[in-house]
Length: 218
Image 1 (cartoon, rainbow, N blue to C red):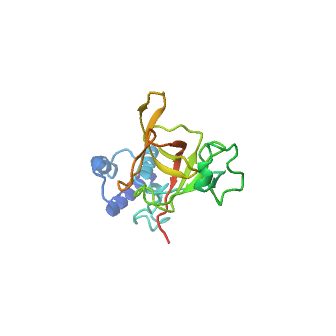
Image 2: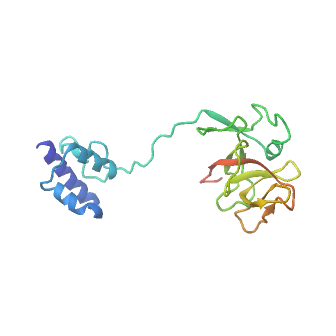
Image 3: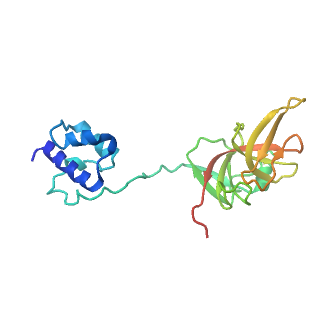
């Protein structure tokens, strides 16, 4: 059997197991009969319909499993970032705007690794409480860069007059008479209050750049 007939036969087997894609019904029908079935078409179908590399070129003798549904290989190994980011406490985060060196290398009680291009003072925090539920749950971890300026809709870390940090959504509300930006810190959970910078002392510490969610909790 020549390569074109091999491709036609394998395509018939794949269609028998998986069905014909509606948008290519006519094309698939012609390929199984007399249409040109070249290398480029074969590779495109294998990639688009996840048949597996070289699936259409395999002879029946070489692959007795070709009639089976192809394995749904929908993930690939992710490159591990080499940049360590310390997981610090909310108190340490709250001190970022006051202290030249709010934390030293090794101060974090854990480390996350990221491939993001972040500043030297990037840090990670553990989410506590339910004010940002359901998107963010206790035990989730967020990565923050204090050198990024917030845009509307960004998630940010901020503090009030104390050194405790809070995690909220950033919503600018215009400029006041003194030329300062007025903004709100908005919880995702409606059971918690929205904070405003014109009614209490609020300072944005940094912008959240990454969210690491726990899917199963002990």
